[in-house]
Image: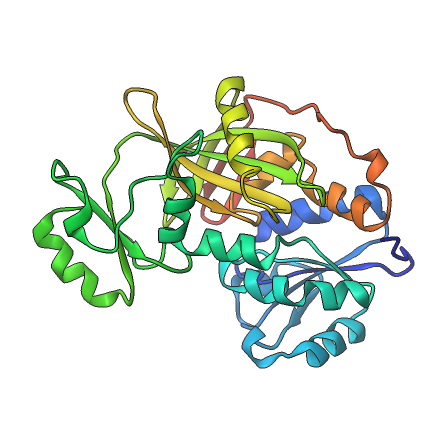
Amino acid sequence: MVGSINQFTLLFSSLSAKIALFHSVCEQARTVIPDCEIIGVDSDQSCRGAKQIDSFLIMPPIQDLDQESLLQFCRKNNIQFVIPTRDGELLFWAVHQEFLFNNQIGVMISSESAISLCEDKFSFFKYFEKAPIPSISTSLSLDTLPSSCERFVVKERMGSASRSIGLNLSMEEIEAHVRGIQKPIFQPQINGRELSAETWIDQNGICHGVILRWRTLVINGESHESEIFSNPEWAEKIIQVFTMITGLRGHVLAQVIVDDKECLHLVEINPRLGGASPLSLKAGLNSIKWSLQEFLGDSDQIPKSPILKSGLRLSKKNQVVKIQ
């Protein structure tokens, strides 16, 4: 699709406290459209980022928006492209992406079916059980997990993995933990190093580069220290995993655990930017730039094998992100 770049405005949704990510998106967007305005929106007018960026708008909660009211909001604010950033809104934007596209508004989003698969942890396990990087054994009941398991992970079946998660629980601790979970799923506790793998996938389902980074310090599910490294064998396996899901598009990241035998275990796939994605964007995974080029009809400018930097590190302390 060829969009107009006159008075082009990009919407960064669910701003919250994602200041570093917001500025990374701004930097990349303006390599394509120098005068692009980037608006951060959130339904919470007192969110941390509201006073830390130049352009902030209050957006109605997505459950209060239908197609027409969403279109009116976008037209009123001259929105021509949308970057969703929160798990709970991905399905909303996927449902409306064709309608918005027909009204000259692009969204960096995967298909409804791809997002639904990634959100349902039990279906996700069954789908990737025999993948090049197999998913962690997942059960709706403790009785069906291997009898050798002594420590467990308990999560909500649907939605964000970090919500209500219980890690390294004993059998006795599980009973108390599941009281606060609507639809629990159970997994064996797997100890090891955590890594994230990030890619950008075009409208034809082709991955353009993969960034691997160790998650050396994780707080509430988000990387506060992360370092890019190279492992071509792992990268190839992760590409195979990504391409198994029809409909994954735009920026996509996977979480993987590497155990003490160097075996890889697939934890989840998130079809969105992540909290530490500024590191991958800085390393040359130009997801925002390529998404805008694709939307504007300039796909021929997107490299099939981008040059990506290794060794860069990200640290986050007191909401301040540093990359070096």
